[in-house]
Each structure stands twice: as structure tokens, then as C-alpha cells.
Length: 355
Image (tube, rainbow, N blue to C red; front, side, top):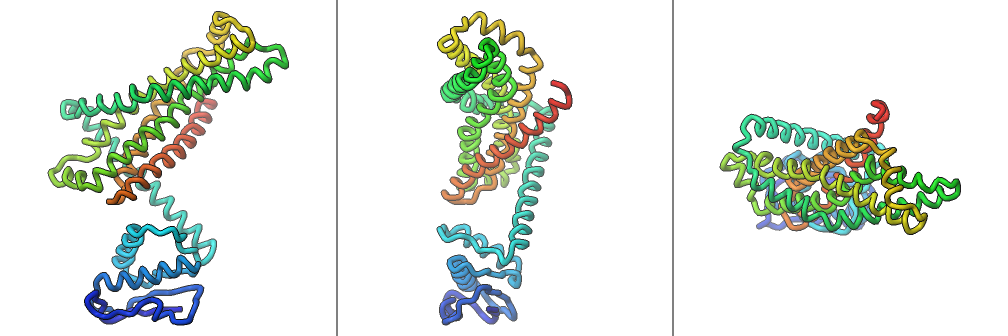
């Protein structure tokens, strides 16, 4: 079914409804085109929105390629502001769906790379003139993402160490290698688990908080006010948060490593009757400074990834309460995805370097 829109569309005049235009027809594909359009306002957008919502509900494909770019952009804003539980339009075929998904992924990657470039330039300007940096804001963020996160990091790290110890003891007891539980817990916590579990906790706690804070500032037009008076948003709002996470993540990771080892030591003493001194000496024989450096490097990179994801999604948030919530959710999802990708890259790189 092809629908051609022309003439004058004004909200003060009578306009056709989608149900009247469709009549008794139930097409599987609706094509909307503009020809000879004179004057128009929101009445045109309302009609297009009705057609699009009908297509969503029935599963028909809504072809908007015949509309001007400006109208499509306004229609997308209207659809985004209208919360609906109806699923989005189904694509005409699998090729179209894959193409749209690929285009969206490329746009997201371009936005991330552009944001990283802006942060890098801001960091370079900070190095040239550190006196203009808001160190008080950075210290406040360090307290929020560091000291205030100690209770949850402590609990999770200790329990992860206990879980690893119980799991490792099941296998090691079969071969009489109980003492090697210390090597297992030490290497697992220092090289991998300490940094990763701390990053997951901060992604859900701090990354979402960054996105919600910046998204709320965007909804209240505070970010627009900063841009109007000429204050760089990245340097003023983003950089203090990135530096705070980049500094606190390695410290929290080392703290998580220590508590994970204590959890493993408690299980070794209670389940395998291994004295703490023997456990500690055996762990020192397998864990060296290169292993600790590996975890610290990972933790620093993970902190920057969490900060970038949270700040980026916060600055991209829609100007509504629902948009702030979606930005916080997107920040956590983006951070977790990038954390897994970065961890895999680090694993390959450290294996090539022989660390």
C-alpha cells in the first residue's frame, strides 16, 4: 500500500486519520511518500505516527524512504518520546535488518572513538595547564567511586575468594595437591578476578551514576548552559570523573586481591587444615610483581572504560526522565561489553609478551 501525502497539513484544519485512509485493507507493507507538500505542521507528523504505530502493532513493514530527512528526524523524535510496549517495526527481510544493525553499530563505534578523541585532547590541555583543572571535583569523585565502594567490593571479593577455594579444593584433594590451592587463588585473584570483579561492581554502581548525573544535567539544560558560556563540557564534567576512576580502580583492585586471598586462606584453614603461614609462603612462590603489574594495568584500563561509557551515555541521554533511565542502563551494558572485549585483548597481549 502506497500513501502519497500532498497539499496543506495544519493542526487547526481537518485532517484524515490513518484508519480512514486504510479502510478495510490490511497491507503487509506500507510506503509513505511526499509529493507537492505545501504547508505542514505537527498534523502531518501525527498522521505519520499513527501509520507507523499501526505497522508496529500488525507487523507490517513501514517504508519511510520517500519522506524528507527532516520529517523522518522529527518523526523519530516523536516516536522516542512516546513510550510504547509495542515492538518496533519488523524489517522487510534479513538483509535489511542486518544492514540497519551494522549501520547502527558503526555509528556507535564512531561516537565512541570521537568521544575518546575529545577526552584525549582535554587530557593534553590539562597536562599543559594543570592549574585550570577542578581538583576539588576530582577528589569528591574519588571519594564516591573509591572509599564509598569499599563495603560492596569487600564483600564480593571475599566471597569470590571463598568460592574459588571451595571449587579448587574439590579437584586438588583428588591428587593430594591441597597446598597448591594457594597458587590457584593467588594467581586467579591477582591476574584476572580481582580487577574484573571490581570493574563489574563499579560498572553497575559508578558507571550508572555517572550516566544518570550527566543525563539529568542534560535534561535540565545545565550542559547547554555550560556550552553557551564557553566552558568545555568534557574538561569540566568528564575529565574529573575519568581521572578519579583511573586512580581508584587500581587501588580497589589491589584491595580486592588481598581480600580474595584472605577468603581462600580461610577455606584452606577450615577445609584443608593448611596453616596460614604455609598458605602465604606457597602463594608467594607463584605470585610475583609481574602478575601484580598485570592486574594493575587491567584495572586502570577498566576504570577508564567504565568512566568513558558512563559519561558518553550520560551526554547522549534524551531530555526526559525515561531518557535518563535508559542512559544509565545503556552505560552499564556498554561498560560490561567493552570490559569483556578489553580483557580478551589483554589476555592475548600478555600471552604474546610472555607475562
